[in-house]
Length: 355
Ligand code: COI
Image (cartoon, rainbow, N blue to C red):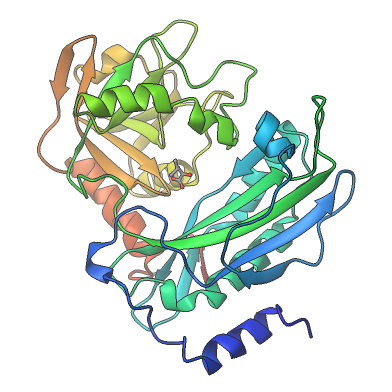
């Protein structure tokens, strides 16, 4: 057996006494990268298939200065979470959805991608090898970050000749410094994150670099993050830098439809299903920025942010406030989704995978 096979790593980890919980401050996790024990790596040539992935000790990786990902941004990432259940078992949330989304993105970015099975097996192996870093129940989650990148050398603009699929993990708590308190968003009306026909609908790394300028300016003014508008009419909601957006009015929940400029969030999709199963009407459509003015509640969804209530939105120096905490609807959806993710209620949706 390979010294990096999952069983070999688990027995090495166990024999070093690393089966106990890692020695970190579990009560004060934020959303930063805490180095853990292992990462997963699998490579493949352009035109080939991924095979023979392995766990390695977590650490820096070597890349050619002319790697496709460094020069031309040929890269994708994913994000998913693992929670410890009360009985000590670990739950993954819909990992096959991330696998399928990575495959869609890879097609757009001219990259080969792991199969759904390879992706899910790699996630499972990485989480098990880093088991001591999965926060105890109620303390947070293990954030799992799969990457797919053009790691081969190119100079002329072309798909890279070699690809690397890598997974690393980090224990995390709340994404926003506000914790679970409502966030304050600024609507951006000059810069845009996505264009029709562009890559806004896939999780390519460049989409996130593109939001840093407006995000930094907004943060410098005290906002939590930026809400983007469509680039043609400058009128319809797109998404927030790191998450999708929902608006609630008279118990009807609306969110921008997936039209190619919006990231098809797995939490977005799950919240829509949870809301419908709880009897709410959900509309996926164009949502005009003016609708924010008389909304009852606004909230964001994402793997990292989970469900975050929005306390205020500022648009062209007009500020609309929604309240001090969760709204009634977002609280109900947050409660249902997170209890399901943590294994505290029956998984009637069949969304969790127990390790
Ligand atoms: C996630 O929610 O997992 C994301 O990928 C967003 C990222 C900017 C933290």
